[in-house]
Image (cartoon, rainbow, N blue to C red):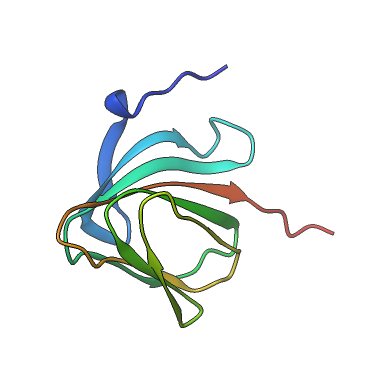
Length: 115
């Protein structure tokens, strides 16, 4: 069993934009198939630039604020309680389009390319 709490989570910058902080509950290796479980806090206007992950599926859940996710050049507006699944290899970017912080909980699920 693992008991984790966002209040006691380590805080570190998001690898794609150091101005966005993430609170990390779980890292790779702590729980089978989970690459990371974290909460990111985006100040107004901050963006995670376009990137892709070949080794995982990412699931994003909006807790607070508004934003936009662009997946494979298609934009989707985000608001509280939205959930988005980004498949392995999909190019995606995130931006806070609102005037308050955008808070997103997310996790990555490791995929296997073995057949």
